[in-house]
Image (tube, rainbow, N blue to C red; front, side, top):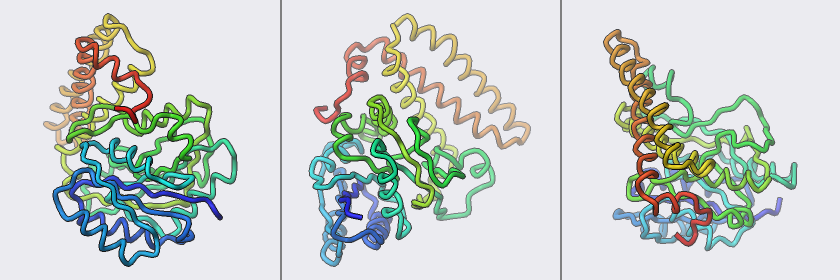
Amino acid sequence: MNRTVSIIIPTYNRTDTLGITIKSLIEQTYPKHLYEIIIADNNSSDNTKELVESLAGSSEVRIKYLLESRQGAHFARNSAAQISESEFLYFTDDDMIAEKDMLENIIKVFDLDYNIAVAGGRVLPKWEFDPPDWLLKYFQDGTLSLINKPEKLIITNQDFGIFSCHQVIKKNVFFECGGFNPDIEKEKLIGNGETGLNIKILNKGYYFAYAGDSLTYHIIPRSRMTQKYLNNRFSNQGICDGFTNFRKSEYSKKNLFKLIFNSHIPLLIDNFVESVIKRLKGNSEWRLKRALFHYFYYRMKFDLKLIYNDDWRKFVIRDDFFKY
């Protein structure tokens, strides 16, 4: 095992969990001299830098601190990748806890097929509080960036739902494909982030792999167990899917209007009405329907922006976001 890896963690004002994440990565079974940790501080106002420097002073693993003042996780990830000195880039978030053999198990899948360019693994929840039953029933999935497939190994030419909280990419492929597309910028989602990057990689003919024995945990606080959070999460998904859909098809303005009036508006109304009816009946599925209402509302808003803003249309279809 001699593959070099840069672990990249974008962070913004989360020292309460960032320290836990870094410590779990320092304790990996992977050879210490073969990986580094890059903390991409996305303009935090707390003591992130001091925390990172403190941990770096006692760590067997090299830890780098990078300040990326442009607000946006894609800026942080793309900038950190540019200072990497490794063959592989492992992306994770500042609220994750990795099992000790996580890195070892995800890197070894690249030995199985030369054409594998991306790998992900299992992401399970680490609940800070007992979750409500309705959350477990309707939202214990990609809504909370969780993935728990029954298979131990998958090698495919399709994106099976890899998230940037647990994703490793060959560095040369990452740069070949133009890095992460825009995602959250100044607390507002504007693009399709890792979804867009994954599509670009697949379009180049590379394979994806799922390593079921590579396990990390996503810390889920109480703030993510609320209807407000889920509505916002589905709103962002609507924007993401609108971005993805236009890049795939480049609809004319006329066809975007048809999409809005024939699909988005009817589904928006249906989900709102169903949410009201189900709530009155005491059926917890109203929460899912209300979230879907927000999804189609923001999907509609995104497509309207494509219709009326020509500069935005040009921005959405670009491929290389390193220059953005």
